Picture 1 (cartoon, rainbow, N blue to C red):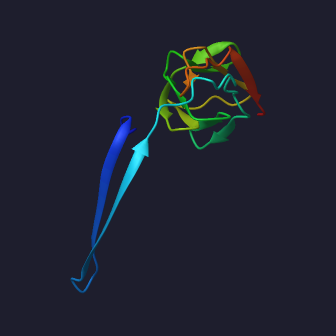
Picture 2 (cartoon, rainbow, N blue to C red):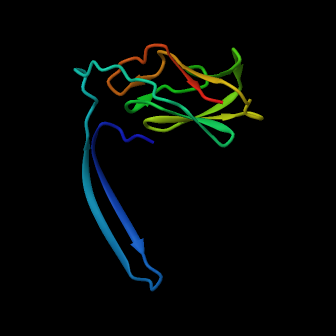
Length: 127
């Protein structure tokens, strides 16, 4: 979950095995992404990871979903669940991950925090 723009007070409370407690407090200021950033995010080399594919980006992105990031095997779309993180997504195959050459395609619905769109990008995975 991303915090909203503005000031946020964060309090951490902890208790050890003997019952002793401690508290730490801090204030963070969340600012909007720079609108002057004109760098387009890039799709980096993907890699197989268990029954899925780990896809990394050059910077933090939003908008990664089943409609914007696709996995293909021999030109056919592989049904996957897209698990997004800040600078990466995990494409988990719904069923068995095909062997052989796989291709990841990411479209312009994927943007960085400044709104710069990823231009249609394709990366191949080695078998």
